[in-house]
Image (cartoon, rainbow, N blue to C red; front, side):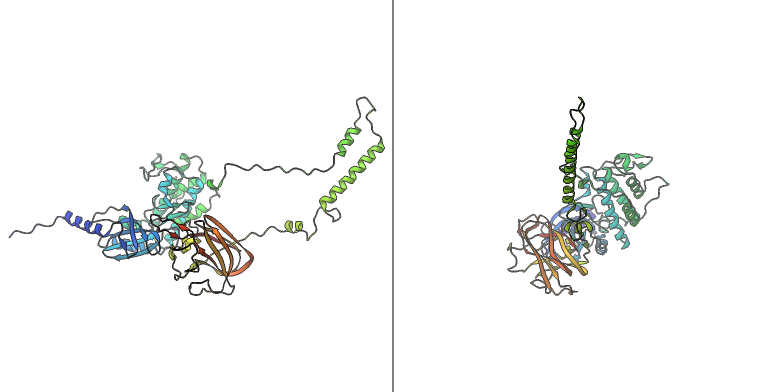
Length: 530
């Protein structure tokens, strides 16, 4: 009896890919909420369809998300899920946050934060090198973040210019902590490898060249000497010597007598010790010309007249003035000088020092009190939806993120108080503090924002409800704000632990590729001052 022919391995692989493609395509919803919108990248794989990176849309929270997915039976699936869960334990906000990890319907998928206003460092470097201060700040941000990850025993393992995002305000975000290595199937790197990667990124940002032997990331390879790349200062003369040497130490490319930096923590402290550099973006090409202060003009022309009258003429005695006339003129000068001194010095016996209780004395005796920024310990959402409006982003309202916290999109508006009394964020200072002002950024013009503070004795927040929080008092209302910074100064200093920024009216925004049309806005860069 003839034996059955074995099924070719290629057919099995094609069948697996066909089944995978049936489950993964534009429009598919994962967990009933994450809609796949656009494929970004496919990782190579020797066995079956490899991992894929997508842009998705969270229909529940009305926002874009990143989605990395792989077939459940793939050899990398378990490592990918574990890497994502490990990455989620690192608290540093510079890392793109992991929002969800699941294994269902034959797919393992990881949902991550999507930074909408950012571009990869690779794209920025395509236009040329960065300023020395900006490149150095990026290196510092990377080293601080990686030091935090290493303290949690996590490695990146695949850090490069493609994994570094810069927002429109040059905030740094890092993609793929642990996850990128797991998806590519590479071996997990050591902490020192992450330090070398930061050194390479710093080098590229300073010079627009890649320090490796071959071109990479759209950059030409740096010239080399004795097997090592030229130092950054050899390529770009404007780079300070201290920066040049530190990059060499991070890259392990310096001379043998120069100590090598082995840890992200050491690199962080070394960058912090550099002389302070002012970012070129903060300077101006036009330096205001100081206006010369004009000396006060007093009626003292008489001495000149005296000289003119008293000067002898060339003819002998014809130009002389009698002594009596000179005495009168000098007397007038003395009287005028006394009057001027009296007017300048005030009516306190001729002294130029103002009375102790005068405004001049008060302003001169003590400098204006500069408000001190207070530390925000935590934040929570206050609305009628159980405090869940974009809850994953609430820290972005005050941690320096340019994207900020985004409200729900409402179908009706701009006044939302007829069905929701307001939506906003309560900021916890950790203990009762004296608060005198706050600043924050609202994304789109047209919003109405209220600022509320809690009673000094309130030490915990009540349950969320569709009203202003019990025990809170309204301090200010700002209408028509947005598109920039909002400055709210209280009429008197208030002692409180909790400060709330609350939207009661929202501007309309048209539908975008991933957002429905409706009324919404964003809150970012909240700073509270004494």
